[in-house]
Image (cartoon, rainbow, N blue to C red; front, side):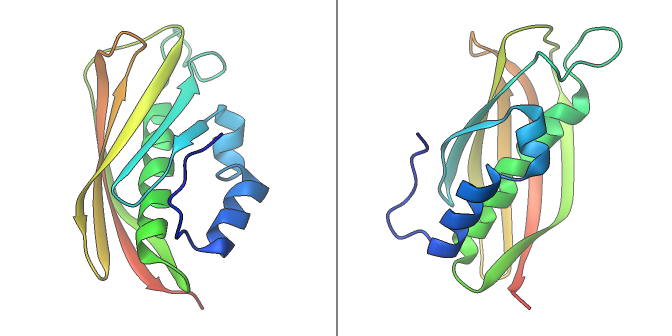
Length: 142
C-alpha cells in the first residue's frame, strides 16, 4: 500500500491507481511505497533490469529516479498542472547484480514553476548505488 498525502489531487490519485505510475514503471517492476512533493520512496528489482554483463542497467537507475521526481513534482504542482522533465543527470557509484534497489527522493527546490529533486538509490544494505538529480517544469494542463 502506498502512503499518499491526504490532500492529493484526486485526478492524480486516479492516474496513479490506473497506471501504477506509468507503463515503463510497471515494466521495470517499480513499487511505490510513499509519495509526497518533498519526500518519496520506491523500490525496483534488479531481476529483469540487468544489462548484458549482469549488472543493473544504469538507465534503470534513471527510470526509477525520473519516476519518483516526476510524480513528486506533479504532487507539488497540484490540480490542473503537469510536471514536465527538463533536465536529469545521474552519477553511478556502485554496481549491483541482484536484490532490490530503493530510491529515496528528496526535494531540493519546490517553486511555482520549477521543482528539483535529488534521488538516491541504495541497495538492501543501505549502500549508495547512484544519485540522480532531476528538474521539472510545472505548467498548466492543456
